Length: 154
Image (cartoon, rainbow, N blue to C red; front, side, top):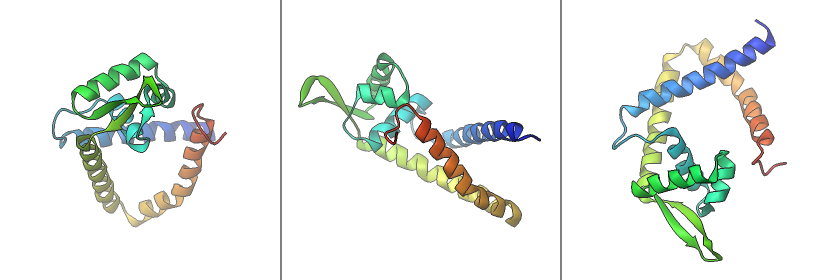
């Protein structure tokens, strides 16, 4: 297989593994599951407490009104808090609630356990091959981050 074919297959495999992990984990979610866009916004806010809606929209590459809709839904579910920016009364700052933090931690813990369990089911040769690939995957992820229009490392 050519390098281009391998690159395309890698992309398909990464997407496919992520999809399968989400499907597997959805079964154990307490409460209604979060759509991917809502979960991504919660993660972004958790990593950037007090982020503005406009900054979240830029980071997620979504229209401001789309993020505003996500904020309304998450606020209605008790997962996101909106506070008026004390420096600009027209702007809103976003924060996750303790319930959102609990749900995200639960998801992360369950995902880590799932990967550990699947890892142990692989043979030694497969584990060694995957371990050897991790540095290259980190470099690939860094390239995507650097090429992102929202990257602060430019």
